[in-house]
Length: 312
Picture (tube, rainbow, N blue to C red):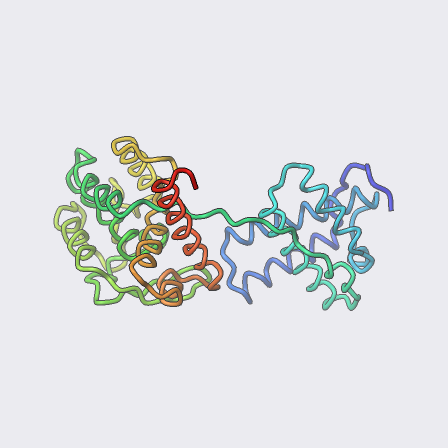
C-alpha cells in the first residue's frame, strides 16, 4: 500500500452502506442526533483516509483487506492532524463498529482490523462548584435579571440542575403536564432511558415562585420553562445567565450550567452517597462514567493535604 495521495471522493456503494449503518444505529441503539452526526464525521474521516492511502475510493472489499497496520496508520494520521487521544478513541470505536457491521453484511473476515486497540487517555475530572459557591449562586440568581419572572425562572432552572442533577436539556424539556412535581420526577434522558429523580422541596418552591410570576399560563402541552416570547426556553439563555453570575461571583469559566450537575454528584458522594445510586440518579449507562467523581473527591483531599503540609 502506498500513502501520500489526496483523499478521494466517497464511492456511491460505500456512501450507501454508511447511510444504512447510521440508520441502523439510530433505530436499534436509539442514538441521539448528536451521536449520529459524530459517527458520520468519524466514518467520513476514516473512509477519506482510506481513499488517499490506497489511491482509490474505499469499497466494501477494501474493508475486508484491512490490517492492524492500516488502522495504526489511520490513528497516526489523525493524531498528526491534532486529534486528541480521547477523540481518536471515539473515532476508532465508531470505525470498528462500522467495520464489524460491514463484515456481517458482506461476509468478510474483519478480525485483523478489529484487533487494533484504541489509545489510552486520561479522563479529565469534572470541575464542580464548592457547596457554599453553589448555594450563593442560587441566591444571587434571584436578583440577576431586572424582570422578576425571568430571574425567578433562571433560579428555578439552576436549582433543578444542582438539586436534582439534571442535564440542561432535561430541565428545559419539561412540560406543563409535569407540574406539580411528585416526590420523584420521571426524566427521559439520553437514549430515551427513563429514570426517577427525587425532587427536593427547595426545587418545588423555586418552580412554584417562577410559575406565580410567569406572565404565560401553565399549559400541559407547552414548555414548563418559557422564553421571553413564550416559547420553550433556549439553553443559551441559561448559559448567558451563568456567565453573568460567574462575573459577579468571580468564578472560573468552568462554572457552567453543566457544572451544577457535576456539583450535585460530587457533593452527594462527599456526603456518603452510594456510587450506584448516584449513577442511577444521573442516568449514566456505565458505572465507570460515574466513578470519575471519586477522582474529584481524591483531588480535593490532596489539595487540602498540600495546603496543610506545604513541604509534602
